[in-house]
Image (cartoon, rainbow, N blue to C red):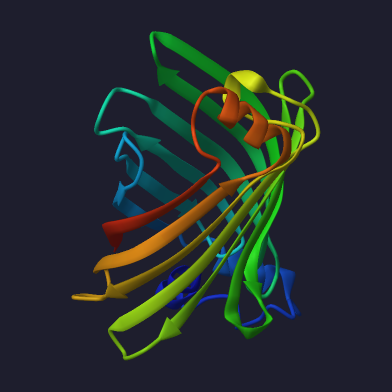
Length: 241
């Protein structure tokens, strides 16, 4: 998000919105933005996955259409999990957008494919002290309710060397075993990545990532013979254009 606002130089001008006609004129300009915040290899477990998290949008200063995707692909074996979101967003306050749309989940592996559709409603923006926040509520086609909170914070060690701390927490109301989801708090993921911006748009990084499952989700993971906690070393590249 901070990269987005920096690129556009947007929002701080006129978000007291004194003139609707002026706001409409500002929104006539069409912009595009694509960012791979994570594109990395994780040295963990037996699958050693490639993990990605990307987002892109097209639109103006106030109204945008977003595409978001995240997932992982095993480099040992063929297990794959993919999530894609298509969202409409509206700027509602300085540095804050409300987002509404759909999410598709797909899990492949072992000759089995599971998919589901979910409605998504959430917010994305900058909290005080420049914390990037993204709380989202999901409702599946079967009425299953889940939620996610993602937060990150960048620390500029130098103008090019930047440390990013990141938190993601997922929870659900119902069990959805075909997607490895149990009721209650599902998992918490904490990461610390140090990137070096060779150019502003290109930044290789190294880091560590810790993930822990809880409650019913942890029970499902144990029943499958896997551990509920993972600590991995990661190496990747951050891109935007």
